[in-house]
Image 1 (cartoon, rainbow over the protein chains, first blue to last red):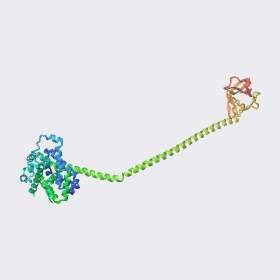
Image 2 (cartoon, chains in turn purple, cyan):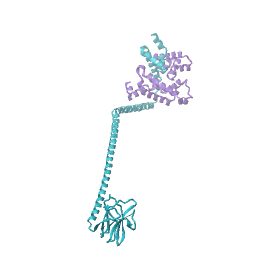
Image 3 (cartoon, chains in turn purple, cyan):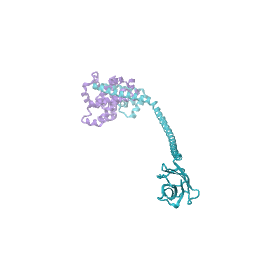
Image 4 (spheres, rainbow over the protein chains, first blue to last red):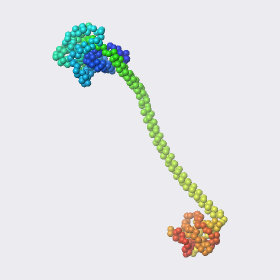
Length: 169
Length: 275
């Protein structure tokens, strides 16, 4: 952390090695186009690097902070005009499963718990969590998308995360 | 405690971790977490879960991307350090000499200006002195010329006096002229020269229309020897026209219209003298 603050080379490398795949997992689910997703990952690290001074440990975990940067950049990218035009023909709804199927081959072999995990989450929990976490939906948009009340969305989100906590612990 | 439980169960902490929250709500959650360790702990739990969830859904980016991104960051870092160094360097440089050269040039400029003004004044003085000197020199040269002329002139006169061939003759007044009028002339037969000693022209001053004319009577005939003015200020020996004759009967002066006449007006003969 200190090395990061002091902007040392080794710190960037460590940061990249630790978090690039997790961040890319999120980015690549929001931005489907591979070169664009790679650009966004690069932008994310540049932004993390440049605004590192604004991160403080009191506000929460480093990863949460980085995920928010990555997600915001990715959402900005897909909402920018030229990107929308490029990808008009792609359906949004089924992207999560689509991506999962598409990239099965590049999944880390050590993360085999995924199947098990998917079973832990009820489908409606998973869909809401994925919409918000991986698709960059706000919970209001998710409520619209899924046709359920806002309160239900919040409850489901909380339940999903509680399930995750149980699973990981 | 009930409040905290309700707050936790409201689901806002989850939205906070997901970044799906307004800025104001975000600040509120942070304030609550700082106040209540239970909320902080709950937040931490949620964050951990999401982090792990993300890890489980991780996608390994292309190997080449690692080099690309790290390079761009390092280039950035390089830029940063260059920039920082440059800044430091500039700080160091600016602090000291920045004011120094300004002052130096200020003083240098002032000094140059003062020097320029001083030089200008000195130049003016010098110029005035030069002008004075030039004037004096001109005066002196004029004086010198005058004296040289004067010396030449006096030498000429002295030459006349020393020259033994000159003979002096005083022309005396005729009844026509006022009593005591006379003119002194010098004549050299050998050199065919006739001079009028203007210092010894004791004649009434002639008016603008008239001049005195000197004649020589050679063989009974008058020969024109030129005209002169009777001026009490002139003291020179005025050289008249050359005279070819070696023998003259007499010299005479008549008052003639200005420029002289071909023949003398005999009734205006003022002085006459014979050798």
